[in-house]
Length: 395
Ligand SMILES: *Cc1c(COP(=O)(O)O)cnc(C)c1O
Image 1 (cartoon, rainbow, N blue to C red):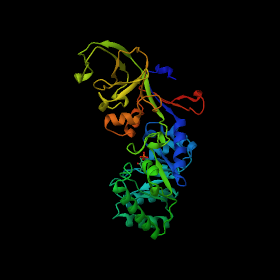
Image 2: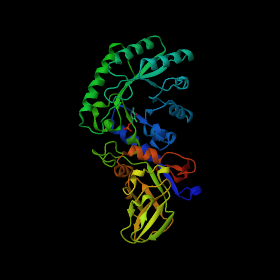
Image 3: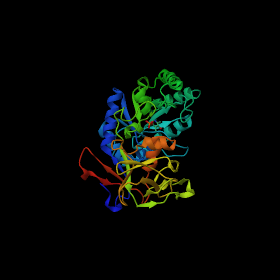
Image 4: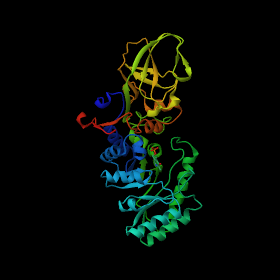
């Protein structure tokens, strides 16, 4: 299953069947509420269009993305269902999203005014969701400014320029279910909803939960949950449950072939800076992937890869295009397969293992290793529910 053009040198393989399965599993886990699959940042490195299609097949009622260009890419690919976007700066033009029936989010009265003005210009009522900041101190209206935003939205709705389709917020600490901020944010959200109700706005959906909250905090599910990372098969709360515990299957594999295998003597410094020196004669393997391919430099002398059925440590620094691994005295040859990230079933490290080794989260591992660059690691999509003939090279 290697890509002929690249002789399997290095590639990212995404199994869309895993995404389809995960979305269906998440839907069963949350029950009634509707499912939004978050496909921002190129589907967390898995491919926005392919991930969205698999998510819809798995039962996603909504898709969520950060910026408007991402929503338009989904429309261009033929998606006609509900989509929400939530990040703009002043001066961005809303026409295309409003004409395409994409829901946009307002954090401020200024944003709401810009959206309503565009809607009047083009003669199409805008579908707007209002975001309240219940404690993340990131996007959204502060609680102080919330009544003003809600009143402005009621007036804009009255005028026919907008339809308020949703009211929502976002957790700061949902991966730590016992953190007191979770209760505080949920209470603040309930109070913010009363303000909305008081002016007669009746949104289609109110929502608060991301993956971790959707799975671990049933009281936060409201009408809809916004699941990103879990849709790709990775646990949103590694201290609470593994992806296996949650019935999730990691969709991304990162693999390639050893560019060179050779013996080096005891006392050899390995890679830049000689931060690692061999303690004995050993066989090293050169892996043709580095930080230019999204392999974190923080993995230097910390992460492991799978070669010939065993985990092998990364020796010394991760370079831009290459890493060196220790093969001991094993019978491994130049050209043999190396798996950096796997689904955990064949012994290969998972994205969570890489995150643990590098002091980060699995989100960053898959988003960066899955990112596309000309001439580098092609990303191919397979569908293990169907045949291998469905495999498309989408680099
Ligand atoms: C990215 C994002 C999500 C998805 O979060 P996960 O932890 O990946 O489930 C949900 N809501 C908002 C606002 C986001 O930015």
